[in-house]
Length: 357
Image 1 (spheres, rainbow, N blue to C red):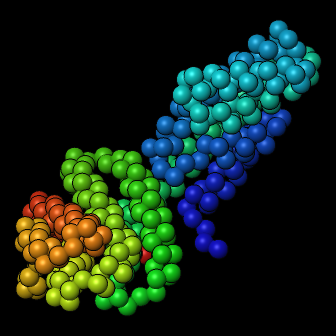
Image 2 (cartoon, helix red, strand yellow; image 1 turned 60 degrees about the vertical axis):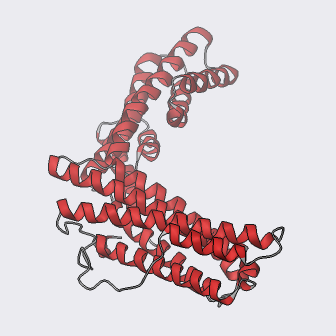
């Protein structure tokens, strides 16, 4: 079992909140630990947003708890009614993420019996806030994982897997069911790429130079994501129309295979050029002739002219494959432009630490 940074931070935040609760002689330090669980976040920026929301949510829960106990008592039905109202107010104020902790605050205060209610409510509220601030402190002290590393290596591994399957698909040398299963996994990987991208985007830069560099990187990572999606879309079409590909003329099949080989080679090189493993521009670029979109489309039209039965579904299915390849090629070309532009401003200043993944 691999312990991630968030798991460790959660444990440390619980320990810290319980310790501070005991140090301040809170009657129920366990509520500080519960609050810390709700408040821990994967990034400092999210932690900052969370602490603001949690303060608002806890104030709502505490105020309603006091009002309901003073007016209606603390019968279990009253507690349930107050909980409904707390949820409604949080939803109205768009504080959905604070509902859980607001209810903990509400119930912990309303279950208090009898006298000295107001001081006790204040103690309970303070105890819960100790947990919230403890989680925020842990997020500040313990640096979040390097999401750029996670993002790049997730993109690289996913792109390499897609490229491997495209290469096998054009040669009809693969297991149909295994590819179908892997396509579903690749879809999940692309969703995860989007999550890592959001995390990396939320990380704040404190120097102007770093801010400009990161802004350009974000554009490139977004384009890498788009190129990977188009590559996956091409793979899905090759998989879906596998039988139709087999019935194409051998010369046309060879042209499609060569074009895809050229594109995926270019795509592979770009991923390495971005982090400086290949010179930018490449010192000895391979003279693999890639057709541009007009040439590929003209080749498709020439092939269609040789088909006598224009109602044959093969005509439309081939068009989908060619269109997908053209779209994929445009995304790769745009990625090339962005990476070349990036390195003209930042001379191989991309640092990816494989050990920190």
